Image (cartoon, rainbow, N blue to C red):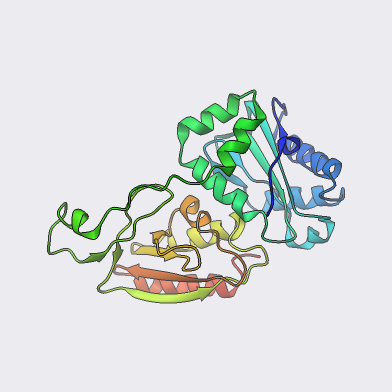
Amino acid sequence: MLTLNLSNIFLNQSAENKLEVIELIGQKMVEAGYTTEAYTVGLKMREAISSTFLGNGIAVPHGTPNTRDAVIKTGVVILQFPRGVDWGDGEKVFMAVGIAACSNEHLQILRGLTRMLGNDELCSTLAKTENPQDVIDAINSPPRVPELISEERVRRRVDSNTPFALKATASRGSVWPAPEKEVLSRAFTIFNPNGMHARPGKVFVSTIKPFECRIDVRNPDKSGAFINGKSLMKLLSLGITRGTTIEVKASGPDAQEAMDALEQAINEGLAE
């Protein structure tokens, strides 16, 4: 398991633009023994293909598959920019999480980041904190597990004629009902070398977002909870590794078209 420690956190950094941020991340990775200098080229190439901005002031720069041989060992460096750095499209980054992966060990870091992304106040605090332990605690802390809401209790809140299967999500303490009738259900195996990380996740979400239908996704290996498949944050929280078979349900007027498009995207490697 990949463990964050104080040597991974670099607070109060400054940069004029995202290119300087990426070069600084590459430098920190080389100094930590995670990569060779060639990996910085991969970081720049990846950013040129598609922005690594996730939301709430956080970006996750990482390399391309053809620079994976520049990774010596899996590692993460987290750089804080209290004044913010323009990341394009009107977005500012206050925390850049550089990832070099030769295995799936970094995925729990991504899950921690997705929990942070849903908490505006926490992200704002971490953008200004002067204590590196705050960053580690925020990412490593387990999700809050609420009291599970029984199906009977929730059914009393809605029309009794509305059929659905209830799935309580432990990470957010909410209920995402998965439709039981008039839905398409398929199983897809993810073969991306590093699982469902940010880049393939973005392709997954952008593939189905244009469709009107609802898409529910779950990772049976982790829990029985369905999440909104059109949310990148929630998709990354599922911890989908290479070889994982996910269950996808679609309900709506264009469900078949959405499933076919998703199948094609997955078969094509989700742009990897």
